[in-house]
Amino acid sequence: MKKITLLLVFLVSLTAWSQDDAWVYFNAKSNEQVYYDSPLSMLSQRALDRRFKQNIALDFKDIPINPSYISQVKSVDGITVLAKSKWLNALHIRGSVSTINSLKSFGFVSNVHFADKSLNITAKSVNTSKSKIESKISNSRVNFAYGTSDNQIKMLKGDALHQQNYTGSGLIIAVLDAGFPGVNTVQPFQRLRDNNKILGGYDFVTRNANFYAGNNHGTYVLSSMGGYKENALVGTAPDASYYLFITEDNSQENPVEESYWVEAAEKADSLGVDIINTSLGYLGDHTNPAYNHTYEDMTGDATFISKGANIAFSRGMIVVASAGNDGTESEPHIGSPADAFSVLAVGAVTANGSKASFSSIGPSYDGRVKPDVMAQGQSTVLSDENGNIIAASGTSFSGPIMAGMVACLWQAFPNKSNQEIKDMIVNSADKFSTPSPQYGYGIPDFNLALGLQFPDMEEDVMGAIHLNPNPTASLVKVSFPQSVQGVNVVFYSVSGNKVLDYKNIVSDAPISLESLESGTYIYKLEFNSSIKTGKIIKL
Image (cartoon, rainbow, N blue to C red; front, side, top):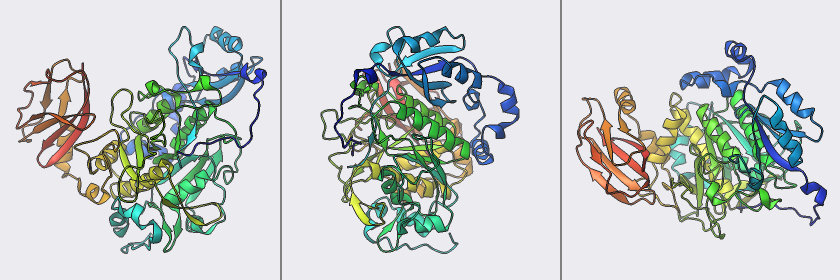
């Protein structure tokens, strides 16, 4: 993991430390029905089409923050508003502790949460931490000259999708990163420019429309998906379209960067983006150590950015996040948003498929399999801001390589939901039956994922098969229609060990889990040559 570090040593004054970061949450919104009646005032037609296709209704989170709440908070002397989130109905603010706490007197304020957890004496905290950059069309058959990028694509069998003309066309990827210098000028991005595949962007840090600026890390990341230089570099989704958002402040490590990220994700949602790629991670080593996260915070929904990532998924997008580069550190675990329940967290392997030593490990603190999958992140072939073809290492690059392949697979199955596409990828991975904290479910096979399909009738059946109750203290049952026969259910520990195996079960017959210790387990239902997976909590 390549950390964003300051190149100059400087002293932080005591005055600076007197200002604290916090989120102020509101308890209501205004004119809800007006927005529901006029959805194009909140979301683009493409965003609404994505919702309709996945049967996702508009809800309270889509409604903008009441402008009067923002203006009243801004009017308080000593309060600076740095970012806002309609999804979480909150503002990111900065000020003295006493002034921030005074906001609780407003009737429309439900809670105030400080980024410094020690200041949340009487309330449950929303934790925030340091930010890290995660790095150490035609109808004819497509045969790209991959050149030196050959291995990172063929490892995932991405060439098989490309050869069937699944190159990301029609999909939109938002890249949330630290900057994109050179993307508007150098040769490896010319194909994107010539085909109008850069749809726009924004710098949320400086509130500036010039997104072809900032740190070159975003340029590297984009090149692994959209770069193209024949016989040298081909990205995994060379025909996808892209929005480029700067959310990372290279001058410091501050919790407001998580709020910038959520703002950018909300913008991506409104524009109709399909996939969000983020090669940023938040765990420790913040400029102000009081803002650090710990492994204990990696529970899927504790941090502000992970909350936002989960909401992004609930809007129908897929969020792909780099797992982190702390594998050799004293705290080797994944950060956020890679820990989020719905995020596809990507670790790094070498060219031969072995885990890269720097790649952060799982599980999440609450015991879920993380990372989810792996891709090449050591000696990854990229373009720099000068157009040079280079090699660099980090989960920063395994993540976007995977995000590009997600776009290609979704192009092949445009009517699938985000959950279905994510499941297809995980189910195709080489360690799906034996996940581990080092590899997660392993390296996906996208050619295999193309074949993990079911007849329409069986897709309906998939939705009619349920394992419940969940959580459970002792017994579960699997409910399925009479048309399904020969159902087997297998339970695995989060480390990938098979712990229970039941063959040819009867619908709604009790299945005992009493022999298992309390914790989280993975179940796999096998039926009619099909597979359905999930997690279950044993109390």
